[in-house]
Length: 94
Image (cartoon, rainbow, N blue to C red; front, side):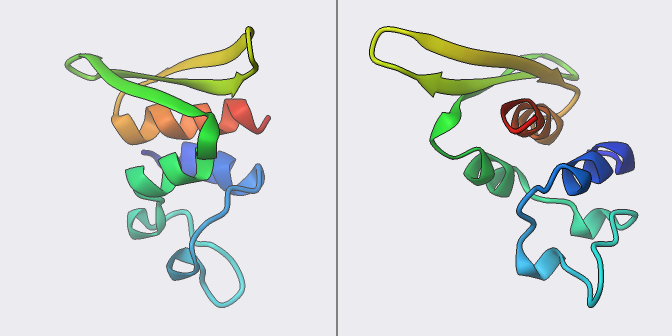
């Protein structure tokens, strides 16, 4: 994940864990403060459906609400698994 994507998560209200929080603000310039893959998946909640590696340097993730006979799924890509799921969270919550 890069700074720009982490900043987008912060601005969109991503639920950063307490250990990511500084005294007054999240320092998104520090990679140690970026959410982990498991935290990103957890934040997507029940709308998370799948993550897979397409090829070297390309991942896709998808998710969304599933009604009884309808699927409203969102599909995104990223250069890492974390980036793909972060993009999915942004799409699900945007």
